[in-house]
Amino acid sequence: MRLTRWFALALLLSASTLFAQERRTEISVFASDLGYTESAATGSNVSGGVGVALNQWWTSRISTELGVTMEKHFSFRDAQQTRVYTYPVDFLAQYHFRNQSRWQPYFGVGARAGDRVAAEINGGVMFLITPQLGLKLDGKRFGSETDEFHDSLTKFSIGLGWRF
Image 1: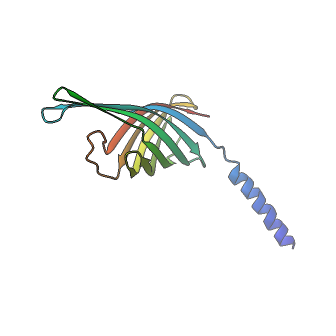
Image 2: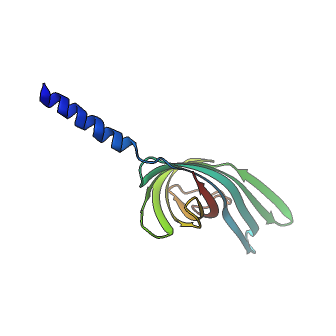
């Protein structure tokens, strides 16, 4: 009986230190998939988007991110303009490589829901301007082929993240 009490006390103390880790939340705004191409066969194409993401840390290295992007895609061909708007949603689980520098790299996997649902891998780095504010450089690669002119398999973004 005495052993059970000590075991219960040890379990309680270890659980409190496990769950006492500081949970951090980050909100980021970003510009994504900025680009322009021109060719005789396809005409000129302009693309770009803006978005917002919410990232929640569960441990000092593991987090989940939910992001929404509004993307505009324009195609000009034979004096005819085609405009496509998409609103993809990304859900990612990320691993953060913690170090003592202001450069904080990360890697993630997840899914994107937009015109289709696709697996994605994600990687990037956050440069901490202050402990709460950082410049975020991010890249994503999607796992599904598409023949839509406006939907690239690789997308890059740049933005600001605020941690609280």
